[in-house]
Length: 147
Image 1 (cartoon, rainbow, N blue to C red):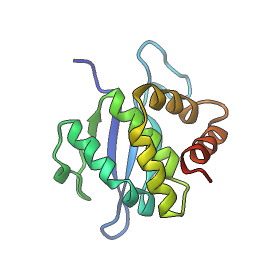
Image 2 (image 1 turned 90 degrees about the vertical axis):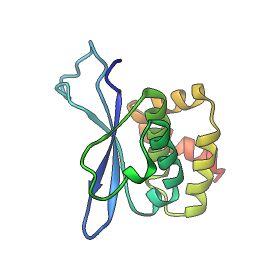
Image 3 (image 1 turned 60 degrees about the vertical axis):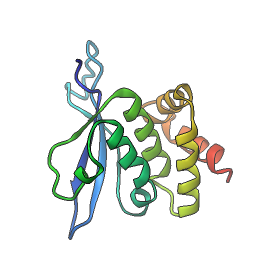
């Protein structure tokens, strides 16, 4: 089996708070000079945005073969995710991270969950690494939350 293209890592903070960071492995055969073959940070999320999408995070971890209880403050080993799970989780993290209204976060979360696989791949390619990623992220949030 090939190495998983995504890793979800627990990022610890002060007290008992923690966040999550999603990393993507660079494609094999294509080395980016700026990345030196290392994992690329897709998104890091914590606080209210993380709490609002925790149900999807736990479902993703479960689909990847882990127990939801494995996600804790003290975890050091990353969660290995296949491409399908990593793309959808990255899309979700990038879409809700800058938001402040919980209702918008929940609405976007529901829409991302309902997307077809092709839609998720399309939007992930637009908002993750393109030159116009910020504009594409805003467009996705407007499309999904209708604001």
